Length: 289
Image 1 (tube, helix red, strand yellow):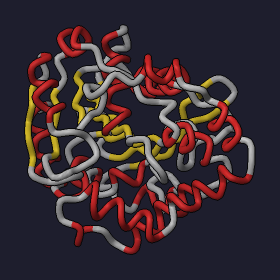
Image 2 (cartoon, one colour):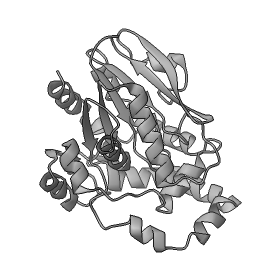
Image 3 (cartoon, helix red, strand yellow):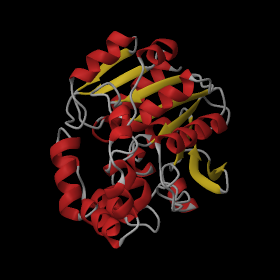
């Protein structure tokens, strides 16, 4: 079940207090769960963007942070329990979404962002959105330049798929049990045995929610990738926790983050928030004590 699905699910990982809340985004609403002691140090956990992505990604980390920190876990616009409008999602829209979530959490929040969302969070802080710190988990953005390439590509196929039943069929294929199982075992996790039936079911459910296909299709057709600037890395000085066990971001990019000025911490797993949540929580709490 999604972390944000109901008050009952929100309190299932809480040690003291919990609540559900929302952040407005124009006419739409982004929803989040929050848990942990009021007045404690604060974390904002931003999930990645992929087929079936939503706040469930943080299910094993939140219970370890919440005894000592106030933890907010939102669903991005277009995912999970947030509004899922029929939009032509672009990098500008996703950037505005990430900016708004960080800004709404307040300038004292420690932001933790995963994968592609990490690249957006870096831009947010580099361009003036205030936060206490930024930790990125295996962020993308330092591979082949993709934004300029995207501008030169035709978008006819994307527009056709998004507006026809073919789009729904593609998302159903991507969120099917065989597809989720293959990707998680072969690309995401170092230890494939950590994949559970519950994760497969929840990923499938979230990916097939009404309206959820629009953000997923934009990702699949590479409408959302952005290129990270080394100037942004130098100005923000993020911590990058690099998962050596994953196979969806090229290993060479870890060295590029370090060369750009990020503090690089390497871990052995593929997705540390699931495979090494105790280690990850310890790193985050120690860094922001």
